[in-house]
Image 1: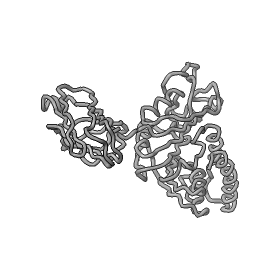
Image 2: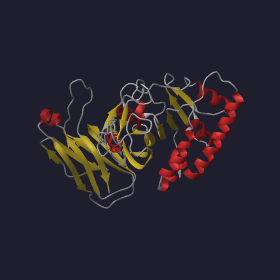
Image 3: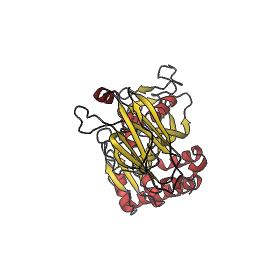
Image 4: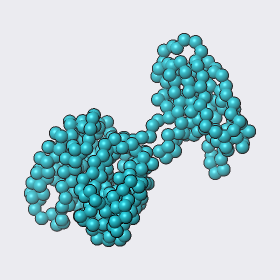
Length: 366
């Protein structure tokens, strides 16, 4: 379903939400006062190309809604057939999360609701999400770098909105600099839970450094924005995709350690292997020989083979980045094709039980 049709249905769903709230009478708490479903109209203005088929982006894995308020976005996506996990902090939520729970029950929704202070408790409910919504949350977080980096390990796409600023409260020009303004206690909306207000470039830099690639963006609100005044309130909406690329398009079949952070490389053991579904003519391995391996062994020899047929070895006597390449011998047969790599030794760092070999950033067979 395209985003323009989704935005129209979101407006209809908002009317339904209002009816449900009215039918519940006095719930004993205050409802969240803002129209979170209006965000879909901003997404309609922002998204381009194939991303306008928004519902297609949510397929295959759950959607994560962080800062769900009374659950408007989560409940709506649930009504469209999405599996939704909704997170908020009851200490800062408008009604202690009573609203989202009451509405989910009244509407028979299937959403899973989690109480989390993600600045303190970074447990993410599922290992894999198709899409994460982080709308109006980032500037309320003490540790935005940490949260965005963690999300890049779990989600394919990210929709984010946050307050941004082009100048400081005293007129200092910030626009064009990759920086953030740290808000004083109560300086913005007399709200002590406001922390970092980024510039446009600062937000883009933050996303890039935490493993995201910005594909679409739009700003709404003040054009002469600052972090403190109500008149200077500007919000930037961003659609980003996970920029963490796999080390190989093949299947790692042994000798690989877990990917470190969001970096696009992995440590190997002294023996490691990859299986490719289709044959190729040329093997390439981009690797880094670490100083610790050179110090331990004086150098290392890499020997590779494809389906048991040996390829020319390579010797590395200093720490540096290298690309091992070899042309395959004989005609290319049918897949799958197994690549085995053997080093003539490894090393075990102090305090680490693993025997390490080299750092690999890419393995291709073409």
